[in-house]
Length: 147
Image 1 (tube, rainbow, N blue to C red):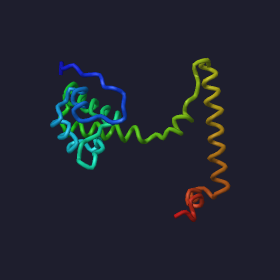
Image 2: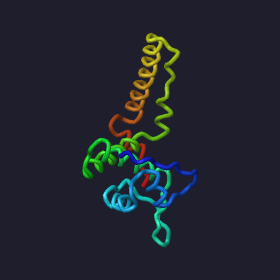
Image 3: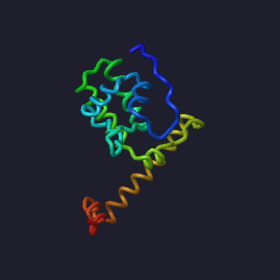
Image 4: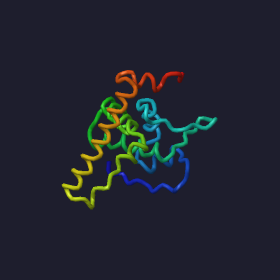
């Protein structure tokens, strides 16, 4: 699509006409995509007017890329967006923070030594869990009484 997109002003909500102008997708197509793509759900006012936020616009642009640039059909694009959303939701932010290890200033030998130390510590924690909680019953005991 060679149509130029307009620059959006910085605000919390955008109307369907603003989003249509920015993305180059007509308003009736955006309404149709809401029915086809479960990942696209803009807020609606009491009168039914759609109010798009930046994540909605990002979703529209991702869908546009799949359909118009990469040549997917609707069903394939729906599947790709579901997979992308699922993949993004699988790793919580706390886990990402724990995985952020600074290796830039380490040599290869230092990296391997660091990883070996960390893995030995993890192995020790697993062994401790097995001996103190009786092995396979550990998760059951840890969650017993919550309901």
